[in-house]
Length: 262
Image (cartoon, rainbow, N blue to C red; front, side, top):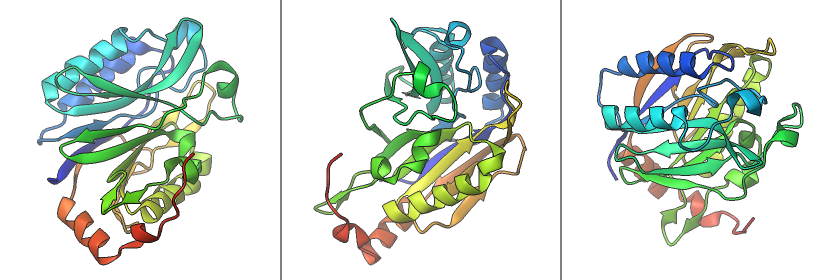
C-alpha cells in the first residue's frame, strides 16, 4: 500500500441548479495543481441537499454522472460525490466512486434523517461499500450516517482490516458543527482508520447555514487538515501508509474488537 493523496473540495452550492454547480466544480477541479489520487466533493454536489426529486433527481446516465466521468478521466484520479438518482419510482441519495477509466461503484445513503422529509421521499441503502484506490480500502458513508457507529464499524481478521480510510460526504449544518468535528475524530479513533470528511458551505434553499469544517484526520484522531469556517477550499493532503501500518502494528486494538454482523 502506497501513500494516498486526497483532495478535499469545500464550497458553497447553487440551490437546485445542476448546470451552475457543474460549471463551478469544473473551475474548482481545474485549481488542483498537484498530483492526486482521490478527489472528494460535498454531498449532493450538483443540486444542494434538496428533496425536490422532480427538479433535481437524475438517471444514472444524466449530466452529473457524465461530468464525473469526464473529470475523473481528465484529472486521472478517482472522484467521489453524491447525487440524487431516481430509478423508476425509487429515489436515492447515491454516492458515486468514479474511476478514471469510467467504471464506478455506488453506495446509497443508509440513514435518512427524520429532521427533514428525506426519510419519506428517498429509499435507504442496504449495503455497505468498500472501494479500493491505490491499494487502500475505503469505506464510504453520507452525512447522517456518521452518527451511527455500528454501521461504520471497522473489522479485523487475521491481520487484515476491513478498511483503511473512512470518507464522509456531507451537507452538515453549522448549528451542529461541534458534533460533526467530534464524530469525525471519534470514528477515526474507534476504527483505527484515517478519516476524510467533506462538507459544504453557505446557505441552502431552506436558509440553513453550513460552515464547512471539512477535515482530514489520522487513525489516532489527530487533525491533519481542517478547512476554514465558511471558506472555499481546494486542499490536497497525503495519508501515510507507513504511519498507519506502524500505529496498527504497535497498538493492536483490532485484535480485541467485538465480532458481529449487522
